[in-house]
Image (cartoon, rainbow, N blue to C red; front, side, top):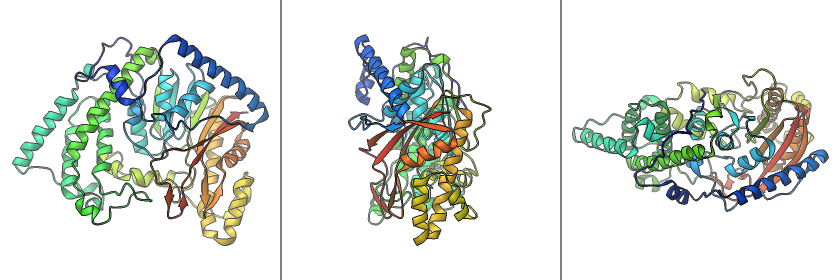
Length: 477
């Protein structure tokens, strides 16, 4: 699945109702300095950062720098279209792109998730390719990084919503609302109350009537967000995908149409502002963004074709860390993204398979830091060691594949959180550096950040979740 840019440089100014661009900027709380003096200062700061980075690269050391962005708006423009667990915040992607790539470069994100790197690459006039095994992530990344001039398409959000409300009222009056689509999920009425499921099916059918493919994809993203909010999921649970407990479940009365209306109006404003921002910056017609569904261990590219890679990979096997597949399963089912997508995605995730001859494979792993903890784990819980080891082997394979498609001397910027095994902490910065050196990289430098806010809980039944991330800069040898 891919998409290319269109020429938006000559489009007329677009307004959503009476909302001006300045109003939307204030509303979304992300005001970009536009005066020349500020821009010169910013370029000077980045140049200084590159100079410091060169020295640190020679030493291959860890270097302190403020990467917390604790007061930053991390949902500006299209970044706020849809939530995603363990998402790299855009300020990190923006800084990495500015520091380690140049305008016109081709950037790879092999674990693109919801598309943070792709959005920032397009804003910075870089070409980019995003890859992810999760079909919902591919849809989100495509929509977030695609400009749409709604006026040019003829799509009017408020008129569309009015038609939906009128059609719904008529169907309800005639008792002709669709039945809950039980065929899309074996336990649909466990995860959704039947009235909510019928309303969601009504919305889905209306979305399919929209002809413009980019607009329909935007509506599908809003619909996915509505699915999650209309479900019986306990969003405050310490585990992904758990139903609300009583009496909260009995009190829960979702309003899918009302939520969809609010989110569509906001999404339309976000995509309009994103499109105008690209037009003002110029050059979007020469920027290519492509999003693909695939395995990061087997990328469909021949030779060294990328100038830079920026990504935030999983930091462990899905069963014991972030369950991206479980989190997206309901949306995948409702969107009918792929009949086998849910079955295909989890086995293709890093660490999904158990290796044979686990002890022998452990000794092959070129990371002293990981091997030490896995050996300790094997002494007390051999099954847990066999469960954790495949992730590190797969992570190594993904690093080797990135080395294969990057040009010599190209930087690979990896944002990853620490993890634990049986509540024993594991420094993933050290693991990444060790595996990276075995895969064909040298270590340039590392930065660290405390995570101020996150979607998933801070504490789960298996211990505390990550509170620190590492930003690791490798260089293709």
